[in-house]
Amino acid sequence: MSSRPPVPEPSTRPSLREEHRRITRERVLAGAVAVFGEKSLVDATMEDVARAAGVTRATVYAYFPGKGEILQALLARVYDLADEVYGDLAALPEWTREGVRAWLEGAVARWRPMAPVIRVLTAAGGTALGDADRARARSLAAHEHYVGLLTGASWRWRGATPAEARQRALMAVLQVESYLTIWLAGGWPAAGADPVGLLADAVCHLLAPAMDDPDA
Image (cartoon, rainbow, N blue to C red; front, side, top):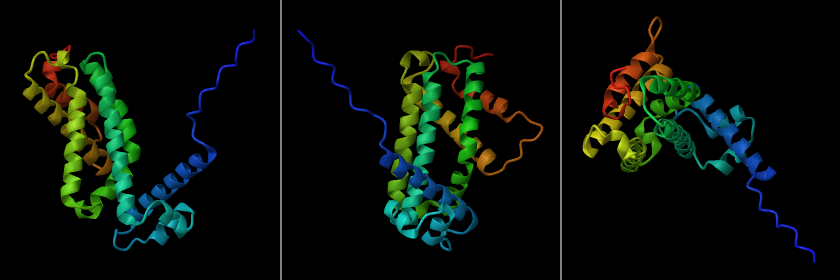
């Protein structure tokens, strides 16, 4: 009696067509960052983006109806990066100063390539990103998610009430975001200093009730 061969599971790998579309979309976004970094949003055209990306204008429009949609896609990149970065901190089995510093060094390495995108979004301003109320709601939802990541393990915050834990987590997130943005994207000079060490001190102070070595 012969048994049936196992039915192969469907592949989760993207098809060649899907991979080609992903690569082309990335080329368009990279071209947009280059163009928007040199020209104002008003002066830049979709033709400029196509030329920088090495594709046709029709290809650009196939992915993005306009410059606003390109900016939204770039903003999504920043949110996705932040989600991954704070998720990495939340995943640490314990929070120590050494661990927080190592996490920040990884965050810097991942934030640095995003600097041109952040500069473009900063120059574009809030109105260029669409409806102000919707943008504000998106930002609040994203930060609520980051805070949720950092306060999800209630046992970690044994030294603080839930309200204080949320406030401290939010302030730590804002400290990291604002400093990395002004340093890496804004060009703040950090020569002769230890910016990661100083930032680690600030973050550890805010997270002190959840730290395993708060006095280290």
